[in-house]
Amino acid sequence: MNEDKITRLSRIFSFEKKIREAKNIVELRYIVTNELRTITPYVFAFVGQWIKNSKFKIETVSDIAIVERTSPTTTLIQKMMRQKIKELSYEVHAFTPDSKNLLPAKGEKPLPSNFLWVPCFSVQKGPEAALLLCREDNWTDEEIEYVKHLSATIGHALGSLTNHNTLMGVFKYLRNSFFQFFILLALIASMFIPVKLSTIGKMEIIPKEPNFINSPLNAVAQKMLIENNEEITINQSIILFEKTQLQNDYELSMQEQRIIETELLQAQQSSFNSSEDKAMLARLQGRIKLAKEKTIYQKLLLDKTTVFAPSNGIAVIKDKSLIIGKPFQIGETIMMIADPNKILVKIMVPVKDSITIKKEAKVNIYLDSDPLNVMKAKVIKYSYEPEMTSQNILAYRVTAKLIDENIYPRIGLRGSAKIFGDEVRLYFYLFRKPIIFLRQTFGF
Image (tube, rainbow, N blue to C red):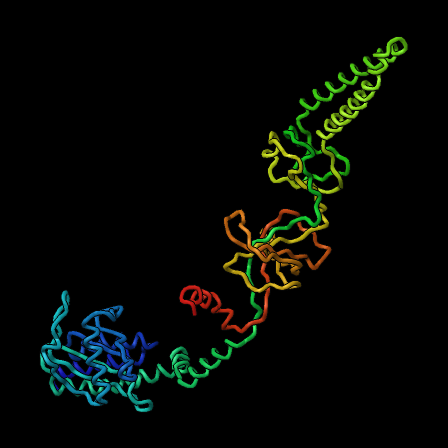
């Protein structure tokens, strides 16, 4: 035996040793595509798992860390190997494809013209992998015999690693046609599970039956004596209106009354001697009566410049700075006084998210200040016509009442509310919005 054969046999033994020591399939593929070159020279080596020809794909390429599957060269070789698998080519053999099929893509090197097809078999499990080698020189019978011997070693190693690869076993199990059918059937059946239709809207804690403080006269608000959320008591002064003009009118009416009273006194003294003064006496008595009524009226208006709280509660003021100096008309609302223990929940549901809401429908309240806890409520009334919100969103107003009457969140707190509607099937719950879009767009 000459020295070259001894060297080659030594390399074969070393290659087989590395194959046996491979810890996983990825490492084994790397050894096959790169270390086999020490036994028989080649330019490129391609390897992939032996599966159905239409699903076969190249897993490893020599001298490349990551396979570029969109590469024209990879696509060409993959097509060639799929054809060999389709032909059930189980023998190691050399072949030369048509030179027209080996034209390089732009920017890529041309492929060698001589190929060696190497199917790798496991005695227990059958074909495990497909290996394709290529170079410019022809393949000798001796090299083919060496590679044929090694293909059995590679197939056995792949079969052994596949047995212990749990992930690959699970993957194959998932690909089982019966399991896929079962999953599809379960998915279809789940579409008919009954669920509660629901919608979400912005909410705010509002007072129940508040006392609205309206302007008692046409005047300018001079001073607010309280702050927002301040606790107030009944008959406490809360607002002062500008009273300069009313004070002047009151004093003027008082002067007019005194003048008429003086004239009436003079007429009474002279009526004994003058018939003319006696006739004037009746007119002056009528004027004095009218002057007194005017004075009483002016005093009533003057007293109204100070507004007093009609009940106990807390003050609810939107913006104090916008009230001071503003001219109010009679009956115009300025603020309100609310009982902190009497509250409701106002919910604004956008028209695009509206559902059929019924009285006593369940509501989950999530405050922005306490988003981890939920408060239960129920619908007590709802509007039939939408209104524009401060965010310029057309929405329905829904009013709800907290079920737990011992919870009193602060008036003015905001958050979100989830309102539950009718019971529907899961497929309708998931595809309600697309169905609405199709109806509005295409009319079916």
